[in-house]
Length: 269
Image 1: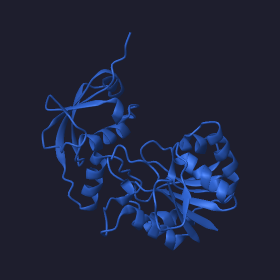
Image 2: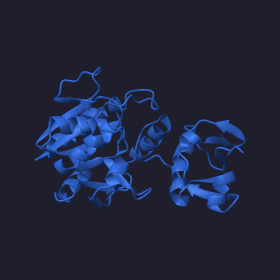
Image 3: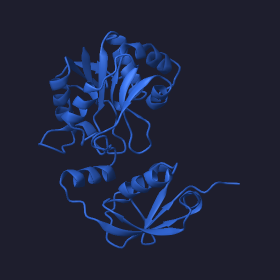
Image 4: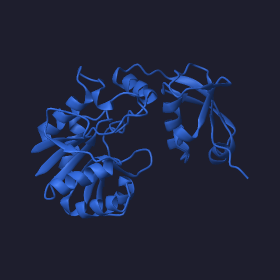
């Protein structure tokens, strides 16, 4: 038996509005679209949400402290059921992607999960968690350890490759929402961008500048693209971005010929 659980308890701080209620495909909020996929593929399904949220569906209360704590709460309530966990911020995830995960499930492993095409680490929020994993999850949360990826890496997992590498692309911010909508609506266009590198980014890329061809619509999408290429360690929130010598927001639309600079933090001495 597989129980589907859709995580909708996040506060959507970066997006500025509830991610589970955003509409990308078929005029349905993501909460409804993704729950519909789970309803078709699982024996039963739950929404895992905060106590201050109200939905007319079977639910599990998310106690806060992040998604791993939500999974721990579900494990305590349903300790004998395998969970298929999906987060509400994956607008490109399809029914076939979830079906492929189920088809390749390994019951002898602690979890079956996709591997990120960006960093080759396990993706915790489109994964099947077996009951044997639950004590470790509960123990981690009780010890104030909330990193699901780290926990997956410590245990035997069945790791599988995404057929569609964009399927688990997150939409956590306005810039990421722009990128996802452009993919869905097929409006992305190839453009030439002039990139300059400074400080640690220059050391890692081993170059001062380069001209690249990209379909990314925003600096956020562009940074994720080159972050994957060069394995840059910085998250977007630790950087500043400038376009054509002016500081910019991460969701500004890129134009042909723009000069983009990602500015890493400067180490103190």
